[in-house]
Image (cartoon, rainbow, N blue to C red; front, top):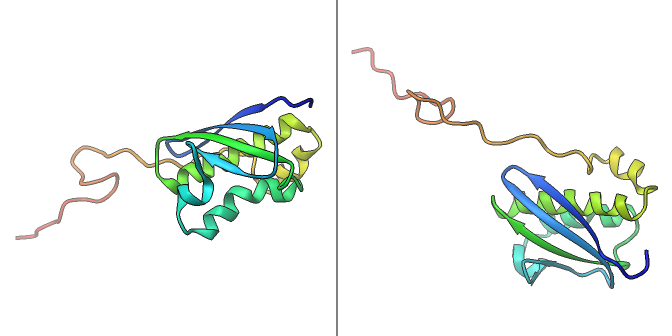
Length: 131
């Protein structure tokens, strides 16, 4: 890999993250902001995003540039994690087993269930009255 960027797409719920891995110092930029500014003071979510880089020992080797759209902050961070994992596998095929065992390459299939007619939400019913 000679100074080129590696692109991958990650998804979770209705969020999509286009991730670019570039040789760098381990900084993550999401929609033009640093990760810390983007998610606020949420260390648990920050750890979630850094997990694939920590597992493959690449925290200090790559800068990550992300364009994230759709969903909420947590779903976007899940999509970013998925995208980073896929990009790392493109960079080096040896990371595949490590990331697969942690479940980072699997797209989380859980999405919000659609609302049904005659109901308030997907499963909630209107209040039942006997009399």
